[in-house]
Image (cartoon, rainbow, N blue to C red):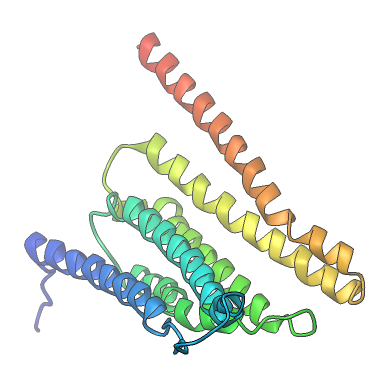
Length: 234
């Protein structure tokens, strides 16, 4: 009867490093692909000064979309980095959840190019972009729940306060985008001809983001105060 031996700790550490390095590579490729399609148009030798903006306006829109997506991917990378620094082991469940998260990262070049085709009568590309953001936040929250709540043995021992605050940050980020996205879609569905309501709905996401930011700061302050009180008591 053969016995399957558990991998040695060194092998586990090496395999976990491969998971993180693979993720970093996906982030790097996704960011690189964002800029590849942005090119200056051919500019005629003789052209009125006022016509330059009309010629360069599409490039300016592409650059704006690129900048926004670059920032979002950068934020996702930083949050993924903060999560990975607490890992000491991995499982098949973690690998599957990480791949699900990376799916939304590699989708950014597509959703970024799609959002450029948004107009007042065709909002589907904009909704695709919001879905991309919401999916990434949901997947990151799913990973943090799996690591910190469901399988705490995958993370390093101790650091309970830091892990709890990070988990709450991921949860609030997901709830902010999910709630805001739902409000925007419902507004377009219920008031398809009311442009004022539609514009107002765009403010739901930043308003919730600011609210949850201060909510998290208060929670962090109260948690740290409680920890210091307990330590001082001991």
